[in-house]
Length: 83
Image (cartoon, rainbow, N blue to C red; front, top):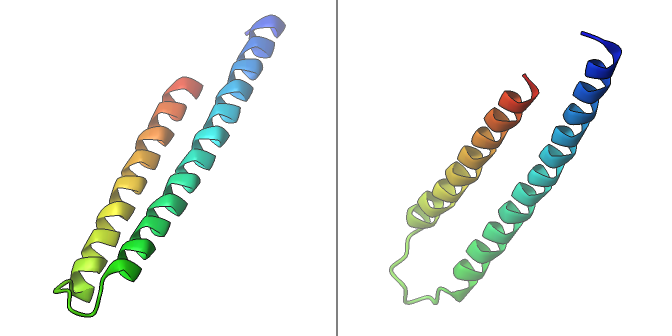
């Protein structure tokens, strides 16, 4: 590869890495939002509610799975662009 191609490739990789960092920050923000929503839901449940701890744990695990799935897709997209 020539010097120009290497420089262009390095610039493109830099752009992709910057975009990856933005997306990671977005994922972290979404995780924080989901956690806050879940905490608010837990606080909002009164003592007469029939929601069990296992139901709340399943909901939290589902949110975590969705966040992780989004992160895996993001990593694959970045990998495809870089390579």
